[in-house]
Length: 282
Image (cartoon, rainbow, N blue to C red; front, side, top):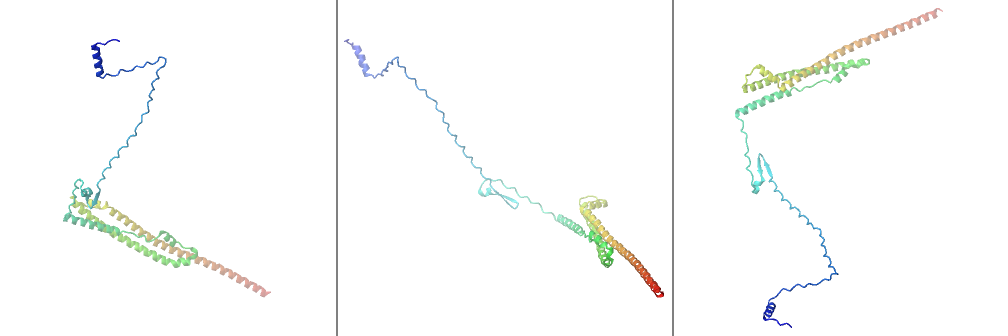
């Protein structure tokens, strides 16, 4: 057995006192046995976490309602303490002056008078053309009824002609009144406008007024209605002449028939007398 020196013993003692790392143990693997292959880790599919739903949008604050009161606008936000714009100050039209009021009153009265004159131009036709044709005609085989009814028909249509003539005169007077009122109205209006008023200007203004034109149309219609009624009266006069002539012709025809019948009767009488004389002689 080999003896150790003091130095070696000191080193061994120092090594025992100080902790030393354990040396790795190496195991000899036989050459014939191969080490197993390390398992290959398969990549797992990544799990995608669902997206978080979007946060709901905060609801918009409702608009403050507005209440209309007369001509002022009141915002309810003012009642709840919310900020609001100052409402616009209401505007008021200045009242018309006394002179303007008088002028407006006169103009309204003039227009009212002109409108009343225009309204007075309402027309009535008085006759029906179809009925007139039926009344003028007559049946030649019934002259007695036609002659009896003729006087009543003539009186009726004569009265309608008088009413039509009266209507025409009234419309004519209303048109003249309307022209006078329109003349005064436009004469004053042109003078108030500062224009140099002439008769031609006033006449042109009056004729350009729609009421004057409507009145002229009514006047023409009234004249036409009057003419129609007068023509009916003339037609009835001709009807009377036709009735008289037809009656005369019928009387002549009857007289002829009576003469023929009388002659035939005379011949029969003479023949009978002759036969009686012959019989008596024999």
